[in-house]
Length: 251
Image 1: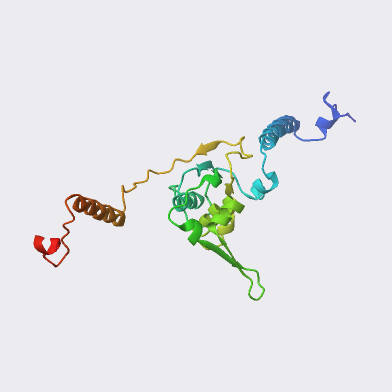
Image 2: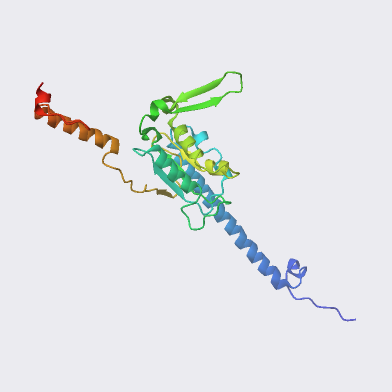
């Protein structure tokens, strides 16, 4: 009876057939371990950068980053809006366009592909007309007779970020994506924010065509100029529909 001679291989290689695949598996596992280690180091560096950016932020950090982990940030851009000197309605319309991804060629109304919007200097937003005193925010507490209201001027003094948020919120479509789009909007009173470690892109507002003077104001100016000219000429004024002679004017 002849005995089978085995080659001089390690025992753990003989347990797996064929043994070359075992070597490939060991090599792939080492590559996987190195990839995991590099990924962890990258995450640690990103965490350190985020902590450094958050340390320089003096505002309410918990409110600023609330819900940011629920957003899928893959492929999204970080757009920065400077509200200083901008008109409230025009700025809100541009923000709502970016939140809905209407500025992208891949826009689809049933998908949430909008970018992250960071609004700075909310306290320096421009209000036109008499909205500071004539515009009111109203809400009801649920109790009888408890209808509350607050003017735009008081709201700007209390929390100017809520003014921009309400303007953008009312420009978004009322559907299931409204909350997710609102979560991508981050508004700050000043120019400080805790997202300094992100690849920020400043948003350039489109040029605004402003008329030199409104028609009613232009007509009033023309009437004032005519009145001044008539006063210089001796007060001879001719009204519409009536012809008056110089003798009647002097009389």
